[in-house]
Length: 317
Length: 292
Ligand code: SF4
Ligand code: SF4
Ligand code: FES
Image: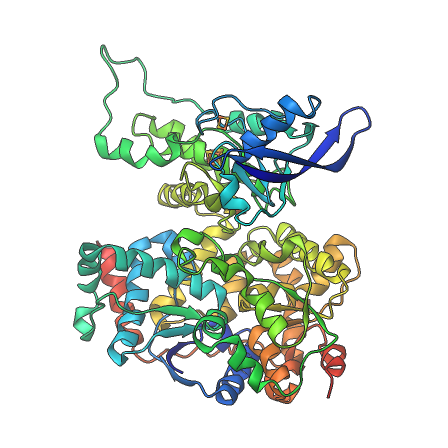
């Protein structure tokens, strides 16, 4: 047995105020954080609200922030987050409104999942027997399919923190589950990719790896977002700053071995988008005043011909 | 302390003061840095997104160059470190994959055998050089100065692929270095978050909101400056600070210094020789506060 010190963020729906409350409980050495919270609720304070069901990392209902990062409380050992008896801070999921104490409102989470139309749109009429899908194609979807909709990734997503309009990691990972499914019709897939390429979609992810870090099921939502980006670009949805940025980046590295920052900004914005270009003029002028604008004469690195060759050979394949 | 040196594109482009500062600090600490001038861009995650194998090939090429010299590889950019670290993780784990990638290196007479270590200067200071040894070189301790650490995503996540199993405290090294130099680290939640730079051209408003929020939070701790091991974070946090302040409708005036600049100041190197005059947000008040 060991003593656990918990600092729990409690939200009172009547006053709509949050405050931290300290608890101390005795639990088994192998206990999970959820066990400690349940111990509190059962024997010390029955008003403490927490959501859980399977206690086996399957149902996804016990996700919350433990010491600042989203985790499944039932899967997180006390010994891993408090090796020397340090106080464990527990809070409800981030990027969500609390309902009461550790229970967060999952309404907006499900609304975003619905937004990506999480159902298969196969060609009709249906075949006599089942739709056949090749093994490799389905294996590629295993990551996305493993999602248990716990909301940990959404809790810690850095873009959702500043923009509620972003579809977010869980729903985008779910979208890939259908984008990558060979049973979808071409039309349905194109329609999805067109929607997902818009504002709030795949190009708004900032590549911060928070969702990859916290996902308890190795869905790696950010990697799934990159999968959709590749699919969208390949399907011809190229009229966006993300694709232009990627093209400009690749062009300069391919031909010179290094990144041509002088061209990257204007080429990403689109050379004809004068309004967007103008927004960056003050930044550029300040940098020039400090003598730190990259040279417009971008020199090749020595050995650049090998970089070009590698690009050529790999692009051909 | 001899390393194959990979300074990255940005320290040779948009933040030249970082390159200057590392050179001065490397000399003062007795580092021998063999600049791999033929090494290509790491791909910064952007090339990896287009074609993961292409990205790994460019990085395997760099690792092979270091391996040939029998040296570990040192970077001064969180993004380069993360991208290279992940590439190395894949290449080391899978000999078959390495054989596949090596096909493309062969015409240049290169082969990667999977033995190169890739380490950010921040990791080198703590793990190889040692903070006690660093302390011996401090001429002007940063006493009375508070510094807000800002790591950059790529040296933190995904921790599984960045050597955290072997070195679990890598997420505290900035604070450790700040303390070793005599300053006080500021604690705030944004220190491990994203600066917003990757989406600057895709969604400028969100990018600036992110930078603005972290700068404001750090400023409100009373920090004299922010310190970062990532030049890409620097481009947003320093380069775009006036715009970030405007988007968030707040006053921001927080100098953002590169890790080697902070070390250099404590070693007694002149601010100008560290490029501290090249910043968008003036570093003068910070430099003046350092006890003589
Ligand atoms: S990688 Fe993208 S989706 Fe994942 S947490 Fe960061 S911004 Fe959100
Ligand atoms: S992707 Fe991972 S973290 Fe996000 S909801 Fe699914 S299981 Fe949870
Ligand atoms: S209680 Fe079901 S996942 Fe934790």
